[in-house]
Image (tube, rainbow, N blue to C red; front, side):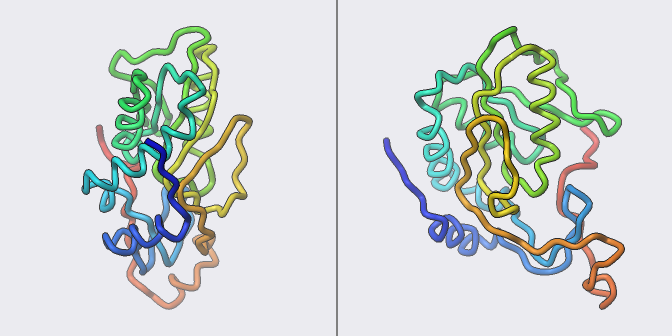
Length: 196
């Protein structure tokens, strides 16, 4: 099934599910922002999870993906569905004492063709940590995908990169955040410090 989702259509889906939030947020990267993409609010609806996953899977269906890997927690739901569509094994990384690792007995085989999937990319930090893990197993990263690219295309990877929504969202260094200076209440909605 071929699906093409425009940037505007994807953004409209986020807005209609109240998943594009306005306020004062601490992002996973540590930066502050007046906007936050809460992908879980979109992906709770099977029709949107399926729609997004088909669009991503279609972009990589000729790449002979053997494994889909995602950083916990955000990328797991979409990564698993894309893996199902591509008939690929699906695994995920987690943080342990601040370090991204493969746990739960997950491993990669030498030369396996791996697709890395995340829900939202801002600085690319988590994805690059996952890519390093893949390379440490001597597996091959054949692509990277995300639902949202908050960098508006500024983040680059060494392999094919696909996303559904490209949008530049304002971010601030915490030391120079005008939202902090206005004493606007701050929220940290990400999953970086979850105890798993």
